[in-house]
Amino acid sequence: MVTMGHTFARRLRVARERHYPSAQQFAHAIGMHPHAYRKYERGESWPPVETLAHICQELEVSPNDLLWRKSKKNGCEKNC
Image (cartoon, rainbow, N blue to C red; front, side, top):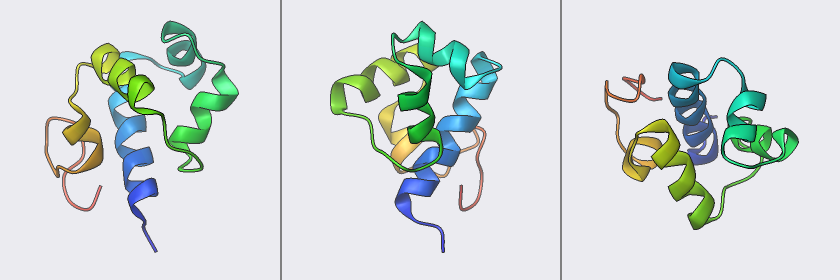
């Protein structure tokens, strides 16, 4: 079963891969410990609002792109 957390995680990973080859590099770029950031990409944790805003700014996406929309812009199309 795909949950909203896993949908967010998948969209986050796709958006991050467009700008950063590794989760570790991106985590350092936004001032996070890589282990904590990877939890977001695995769907194990949700970022606080402030962190989500920072992630979106760095990846040049809106929170809606990661949370709700099925759009081609964020690299995901259907059920992603």
